[in-house]
Picture 1 (cartoon, each protein chain N blue to C red):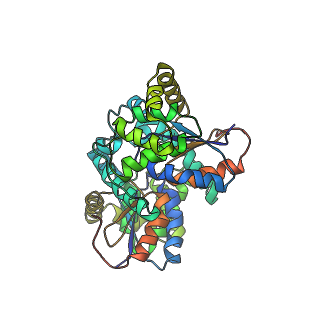
Picture 2: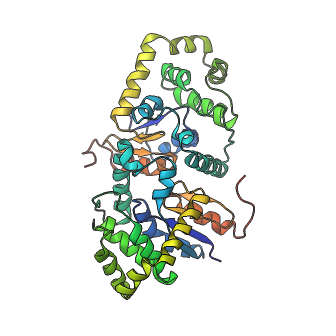
Picture 3: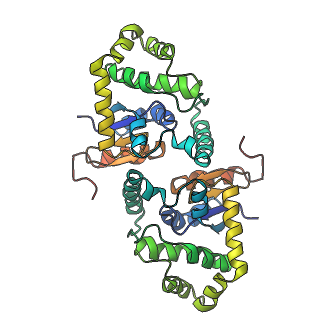
Length: 205
Length: 205
């Protein structure tokens, strides 16, 4: 079983730097990651939000964009705000989930680079096809698998599990002992925790 | 002029570890801090929140308490949840503002220790009187100054300035060049920024 699960939504701005950083940070600690695309929409809807909190609360949104700009500058990552924000991430999430697990991390990074690094739309199948082709995965069959009923159901199940785990947003890390670490700024802490609590011990009280 | 302003609300849970850490972190970087108590209530009300977002959004609240517990454990700080949460921070903020600036940091830390370290009510003048007495400040005159009209107006002005600065929550650091850093987890980054951008240069674009 993988040590740590990395939960992300392709619409989530802070998931971009997290996705670009998390694999190297896990490897440094000898941890394997399970990449878990999910949809924030149903979790937000359950809290009464019909849009991103960054749009619903403009003060928070203005802060986020500047904070993300500083974060990306420090990491040497390009940042281009996609329009509209948030992007509809349904097809990207389905496509990521339909892939072999070994292809999922590189595909996910390619989607984030297109979206937040180059400002491209990710509800456009062309964007996803280009990301797939860049990995050497044939786009046609992958995009067809993305929308088959079993895969659609699998994304619903995965999103329901995210809700059951109590994820307050994205990105999150979850550990075998039941801890949740939310945010790009919690990656190091969450991975340190997983390294230091290797077995499924008792969760938080 | 002080290099960096530290903005905090006594009701804010993450302001507790931040208040306990920030002065040493600033001193390590050769920076002076101006401690700025303010009230989040009016800023939240402007976003339509009549209670703490940690109460309005229970998933977020559950996450916060566990995250804060891990944070305090790592720092060796005691954590006791005050009831009710959030505490009414009006009198504590007025009292902090009425003090000489030199007494404000130690008083503020004493209030946070009582509230989040020992679970005491901070709308009880006895809690504030104990914090004042611990500093060698006579409680009676300080609490009287807290509620004089000029001091009440000064807290309103300070809170209006927090809103004008676009603070999305508490704690925050603000730098002379107009940057805002939100959260206990941004203290190091904000202070590094202030050290590396010492003059009032152009603010964020």
